[in-house]
Image (tube, rainbow, N blue to C red; front, top):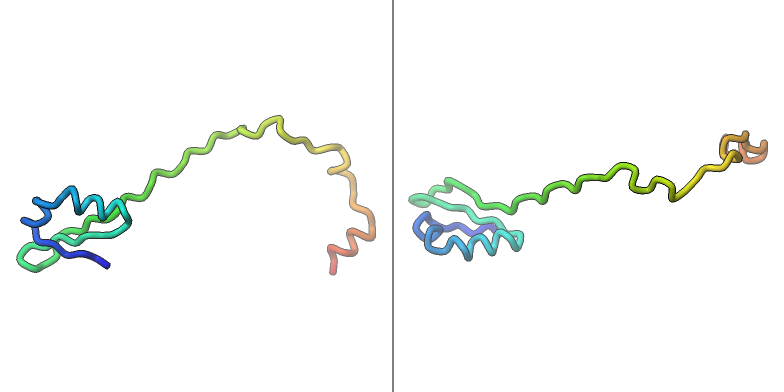
Length: 78
C-alpha cells in the first residue's frame, strides 16, 4: 500500500522512507493534502552481456548438415 506523508514529515523521516522504498514500497509526498511526488524503487540496471562467452564450449559435427532420414521428415509433416 502506498504511504502518504506531508513534506515536513518527508524531510524529517527521509532515511526511513527510503528504507521502505528499497523494500519495494512506494511513498507519496503531499503538500497541503495534495499529492505532488512519489518515491518509487529504481529498476536495476540491465546486465550487460558478454558476447563469445561460450566460444569453444561446444561444436556442431558434419552430421548436423546431412539430410534427415525419410521417416523423421514424415514425422515433421504431421
